[in-house]
Amino acid sequence: MIKKRCSLSGGFTIVELLIVIVVIGILATITVVAYNGIQTRAVNSKNVSEATQAVKLLESYKAANDTYPPTSAAGVCVGEGFVNYTGDSNGDCWDSKGSYYLSVDPTFNTALKTVGTISTEQSKCIPYAATACFSGPVYATSTANNQPSPAGPTVRYWVYGTTCPTGIKVWAGTTSDVSACALRLSS
Image 1 (cartoon, rainbow, N blue to C red):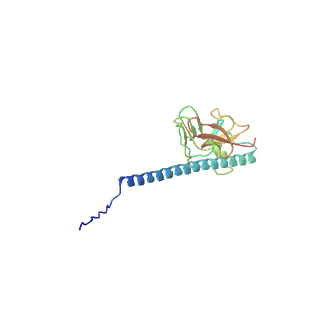
Image 2 (tube, rainbow, N blue to C red):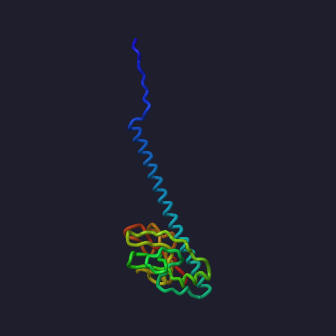
């Protein structure tokens, strides 16, 4: 009589291990893409909220004083807590790495504080290539960095993507998906 020998293998084959690794890789990729999308939407939402709050403050100031606060430039940052790129005592909400800046005007922000609370939280920088960084809302009385201005004063903000959640698009990046948007103020 011949005895059959039964052998049970206790491990996985290489093919089974590769399949598991590929599935884990696919799940990790999906998770990273979803997380990045959530971060982008959160930054955009925060920027729209800050711009909308700036519009409310500016309109309240104009209602109380019949004019918008005086500014030292055609475009100034609305709020405080911005990174200081220029080395002066004020923060900057637009930095093109040496050729153009939009800065905080302390007199302008002090005037806005008479009608409400301005943001003091540092906004996340939205990078544009290696040459610029955008953060926070800007009150623009005319063109800012040669961006076309809608008729009258505006509050500008930047978002990731090619569309503006609210307002009109006044500029779009050519090397990345970044757009400048504008909310019109009453003239």
